[in-house]
Amino acid sequence: MNNFSKFDAADYLTDEASIAAYLNEALEDSDPDVFLMAISTVARARGMSQIANDSGLGRESLYKALSSGSKPRYETVAKVVRALGIKLHAEAA
View 1 (cartoon, rainbow, N blue to C red):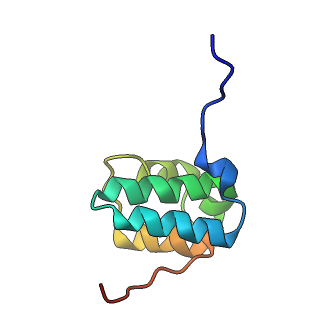
View 2 (tube, rainbow, N blue to C red; view 1 turned 180 degrees about the vertical axis):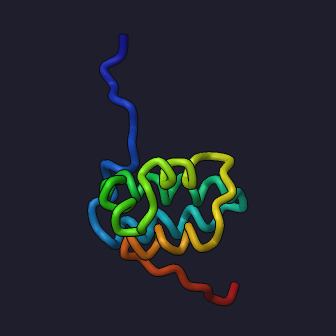
């Protein structure tokens, strides 16, 4: 029996700087599921019910849209990103 608790990144996403760094790292990965998982983790850190309310999505729809393997529409992702209070931007590679 181990005395370790399961790691949850949501426990460490306590401010905008850590959230931005976390999402930027996820955007570096070529697997779109990594970014969806990161957004889901941030939403859990902020409170899924609050993010669902702020985005205008149902809580069930939010979980479904951010689940691994889902293919959410851009509009859905944009609503969630706005509800999280973050901005995504592009820069030259």
